[in-house]
Image 1 (cartoon, rainbow, N blue to C red):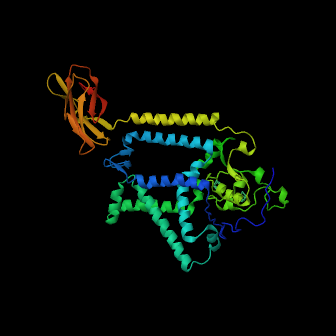
Image 2: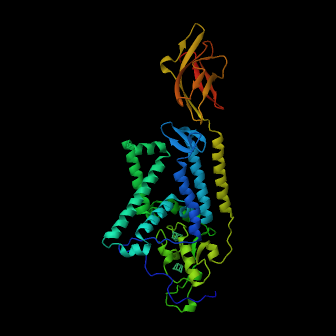
Length: 455
Ligand code: SF4
Ligand code: SF4
């Protein structure tokens, strides 16, 4: 391979992001992948902070109500009994993640994972208040006085503010956000909610401000899946050793050296502190910061970009790589099936939950010589956006239903009501009877038993 001659002067400052105390400071970089990251992360941040405030017809867009045991999901109201549907959404999401991992490695981690996004936000605040990574590394461990103390305090205050905003927004998906804010402004927040917000904020602060990459390295199970999911055609952030080695600072003649000048910038920008030149590692989150950093170096050296790039093992060996392969097609099929099942599940939600209990104190009560009655307690819970009157009837015409012919769910979405079914005492000792509930464009039924005499 023809080499483009090296320039004499070093490209990068020799300052390492490692401070004397071993703490590493991530250096921010710019480039096309960082721009791409902005395109994915800012809308996601906007959605997280914005969705909680959005309402349609007075109803939140996304809300999990423990009080009403109701989930509002983009216009659909689900009951707690529809939780398997939420589990289905998560499983379908996991299949999407697996599909992406086989195709492009851990791009979810690098471009959309909340842990990465919040870590980058906290690093940006750190850079804004305490300066760039090399500056922070140089002064790490020195006594804090004057301006540095002020900057450090400002950083922590901004971190705490962001952590509190995050905690409040997250909680707003379970407790009405307007209620939280109004209570906070009037200093009327309950101790339990205050405690919850404090815990959530502390976790966010510790996660994104202090622990950061250690979560990706030691706690995230997804990193462990990598080796199982990757194959020789998976596109992942890779260092082209054939092109880069031997590195220019090693004792080799300039003509025989590779394109890597060992400037170390790819390591300095890495949020998990690894050296991609050591090969594929579980700690790599495919954020592509090292690609942008190295491309900048290559631009300055007037060499082709891509010493570090998204490449498969096959491509690095100079062999043809197949994107659409049986393994990927298999994951795509599983993913489509999972999303199909979830979509079908949504069409099957009832919006009305019914529970029937027999009154055990009056299991069988005679009405007259020929008629026997059974007592029931019926619970009806509505989950539609607009509650209405629900008509109650029996599917079997030979029985009489006594009780309210209509249930009003407009005041409360959940009511318990007594009902009595009466029928001929000459019939079978045990018969199935079906309550039918109609209203709000929904019809649902529930079967119970009618007894003519005790066993
Ligand atoms: S791979 Fe690129 S950024 Fe990393 S040390 Fe080599 S030249 Fe520098
Ligand atoms: S090695 Fe590169 S892609 Fe991987 S985490 Fe570090 S900077 Fe990101």
